[in-house]
Amino acid sequence: MRELRFGICGLGFMGRTHYAHLHKHPHARVVAVCDTDPRRRAGDWTDGVGNIAARGAEHASFQDVRSYGDALEMLADDRIDAVAITLPTPMHADVTVAAARHGKHVFCEKPMALALADCDRMIQAAEAAERNLMIGQCIRFWPQYETIKRIVDAGGIGPVRFASLRRRASAPDYSAGNWLLDGRKSGGALFDLHVHDIDFAQHLLGIPASIAARGCAGPSGRVDHVSATWSYSNGCYAVLEGGWVFRPPWPFEMAITVHGDDGTLDWNSLHGTAVLHYQGEDEPRRIACDSATGWSRELDYFISCLREGTRPERCLPESSRTSIALALLEEQAIAADTPVLVSDLP
Ligand SMILES: NC(=O)c1ccc[n+]([C@@H]2O[C@H](COP(=O)([O-])OP(=O)(O)OC[C@H]3O[C@@H](n4cnc5c(N)ncnc54)[C@H](O)[C@@H]3O)[C@@H](O)[C@H]2O)c1
Image (cartoon, rainbow, N blue to C red; front, side):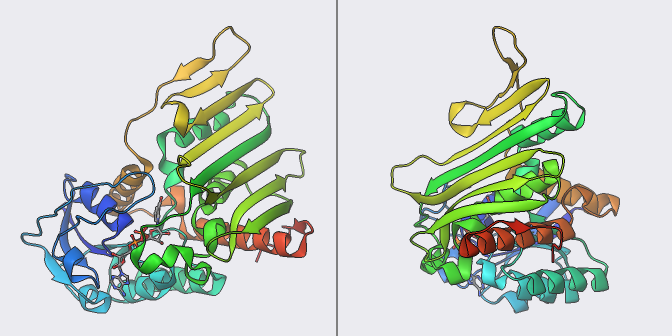
């Protein structure tokens, strides 16, 4: 099969991150890029972006790459098989729908959208066009999280009693026009940052029976820190905590602990790359993990699904929609200051 021809829509932090991987991928080629900022679409990336580290080159060479200032124009380009949508969140739904109607496969960044009606439109458009849609819930592909899920699923720590998922940062200050710090656009840290842990918790443990949550507003004006407890009917529970209210120079941190009857798995991004498996010995077992990021591994998976003609079963859009539904329930539990039942998940 020939290489897949990609268009990248939005050349900020995530657009550059995906470009850096796609343009050297053995089965993909970037044939078009789009950004409203003329410097960015010309390949001048000297302005720093990003909350973990600036990824990719400072200058991209767009030889043989068509450059557009308008997303809809790029989507009409016949050379493109698939698009990576790395635009601010409020544009995800409209651009995904338009891309599907133009017959493109879509890889769209998380969060899928802030309203379930928009998630539904995206799913329906991809289905109607018979194209793949995958949302970039990259933590499912982050090597340490993937390792932990593999061990848990294989019964390696016995029945799970609880999990703790944490993601903390200072407020992002790099986004175009500072859209991330406008809660109406980004959804605040609950939807933009914490949604990663919501998505992984439901991927690992399933849908809880109820959710209790506390949170506070921060610089976005929406919930920018949250502490949620998910309860399951079998007695298992998960505590999800994080946000971007922390004052600089707070280091970005993601962490997960999963405890079962036969052992505990633990990883913290500030403490190295190995997952630690505590089983009652003098030392924990250190489980080495792949050094690639979840960002590149999710694209590898998306590309492999397209090459094989299969749906992205590991990260279906219906499941990404469920993560938005769960985020909305957390927001509801915070606003009402009372736990919510999940039995009637919309
Ligand atoms: N998976 C992750 O870990 C992760 C990390 C950061 C951001 N994200 C998500 O990725 C998406 C993009 O975030 P970002 O951090 O890259 O933002 P960003 O502000 O750095 O980049 C957005 C880019 O889109 C461009 N743009 C804006 N409006 C446009 C339009 N109408 N047409 C074309 N280009 C337009 C901007 O000029 C900018 O270059 C968001 O949904 C965000 O939540 C995901």
